[in-house]
Amino acid sequence: MNRRTLGLNGLRVSALGLGCMGMSEFYGRGDERESVAVIHRALDLGLNFLDTADMYGSGANEELVGRAIKDRRGEVVLATKFGIRRDESGGRSIDNSPEYIRAACDASLRRLGVDHIDLYYMHRRNPDVPVEESVGAMAELVEQGKVGHLGLSEVSADTLRRAVAVHPIAALQSEYSLFTRGLETEIRPTAWELGVGLVAYSPISRGLLSAAMPSADELSADDFRRRMPRNTGENAEHNRALAAEVKKVADAAGLTTAQISLAWLLAQGEDVVPIPGTKRLAYLEENAAAADVTLTPEQLDALVKAVPVDAVRGDRYAVMADIER
Image 1: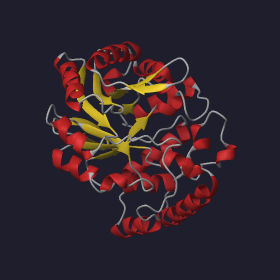
Image 2: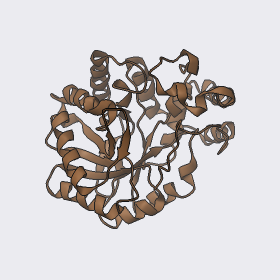
Image 3: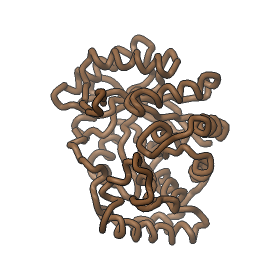
């Protein structure tokens, strides 16, 4: 698979990454054996950029990824995140304090079974802690050899600019897809200006841009998409109609809706790296094939016409916090 560079310090990753979150939580019950097989097959295909976080499965996802890559660490560009703390009752808080950052990194290294993390993200930002303090603590981890490169997730253009003034930021991870394009106005241009790569999570809009996406009622009780505003009520009907328009363009190109959606993202610039998540081998193979697709200007124009900016209805999450800070 082709490689792309994140940031100005030469972090080379596969053009597509693999989001591992759903292997442990949020999308119904997982199967560790198949999840490990998916990770191994991804590496076989040259897809070397693996994404996890300490809050996925309350640490279980990092442990799973660690077991999967134990004998193949040299093939992996490993990314994980800190910042979202979970308590025993299921509550969450955001902690960006330097003390917590140091402790969280050490805990992630233990769970992953590695001696360094290639890309370490601040998962969400707490505005009560100056971003300069948080990035300063993250920079210490780089100096200590525990972390290779730094990243942020879901922050504003202003926050990104302040962070880069402290230490180089290799990547900004934000939701980006044909269905989610709000960052194109200010955040994406700022990242480009600063030399920060863009890692696009939920590039298939949590399955909405996939022929395999069931209705909310058909999802398992522990699948958080049952409560996703974009997938419920009148919003669901409207958004499925948009996805149907994307499918028409995909059919004409001999692609699936997921593949053409990923190819559209890849066409947005060499600094963009989508990380579609899956726990199924069939979907991994389907997604990986998108890396070899080059869309024509006419196809790109048809996709934008199929899903105009702000055409999608419904918030991205059931509870929308002010996550761009």
